[in-house]
Image (cartoon, rainbow, N blue to C red; front, side):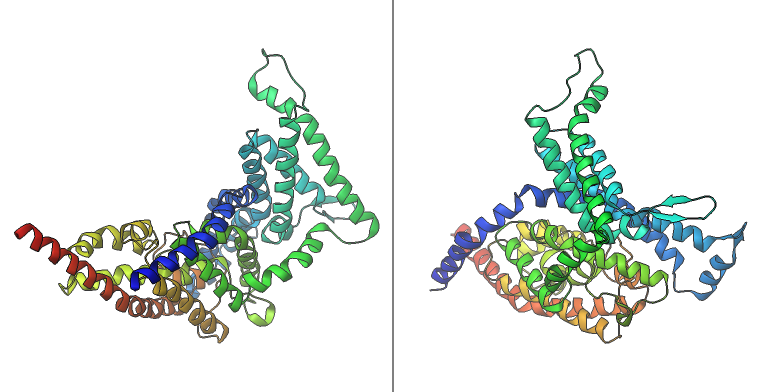
Length: 449
């Protein structure tokens, strides 16, 4: 009976969920968005490091960096400048990466497409003019950073798509074979570059001449609200968490499907929190966000998809109690250490969790529990909001909780949730362990006979 139920459940998953997951995972625009945001990760982490230095929760340190100055420039302002010059370019660099990835997926020159996309980004972004006697023109960090990420995605996809269309239809300038390849590629990009940049120039002119403002604000107003219903609310985040686990269950990397869609929202929220933290106004009353990229990475999916840190630590408990099967005893060192650094592929395919109906319930419940508890802890003020600081996704829990909230309360809520995650997984792990021990006893009896 149990086998028929399991087969029926797996059949439903394979028939309805697997095709959708496969198509989403192979959808070129989503792959381009994923790759483009991945390009920005070094800048985000570097900027976050200096954000931590600028706001480290030691009064003597913050007073010192605010007092040390050379020619009126404080150490604090240097740290802030580095943060803005790295993390603050999220939208611009993401635009380059998305265009490059999309063009490369169509077997064309990604670098040229990325450069054209960056030029287009600057064209549609409104300038700042200062100075009456000696006018100076600049670009606002707001629109170059997370606030411009939506526009960066659109420009990147359009530019990459149009660029590859021109090249693949051979609408380009051809140079003699004797011309160096780098120069040849530059001239090949001339016609598509002219068409793309002119198009975005026309978009800028329409907004400027009609008094509609700018494309950044329009896109934010159109897209941020509906997407925010899923990416910026507790209910929506629970749906996203469920889908992440469901895709993993059928063997498809859940983050590669779900995060590609919602990561722009989470990164924009992180950027907004960063600005508010720098201004000393990181509160919900000032428009700060609970759901951010660090919230999802460091508080919801501890140990990786399914919050499997609870599972691997549960395995460790069974081994220490000398109650584990030989299979779990062998698996423990292969899963616990990577799991502490949020790497759970050994657990996913070694346990396995993929298509394992015994573990699907805790695999869904554990990250949803983490989402709910952390959300209300931050909403109530028991735990500070994430400051916008981004740490490497391999940063172990407890440490990441402190770094992303600038408070030990962040570590404590992680610790509390890890304990509950272990308790969620243990009853189901007992079932797996008992089944494995029965199988091992049967095999031993056969060998003895």
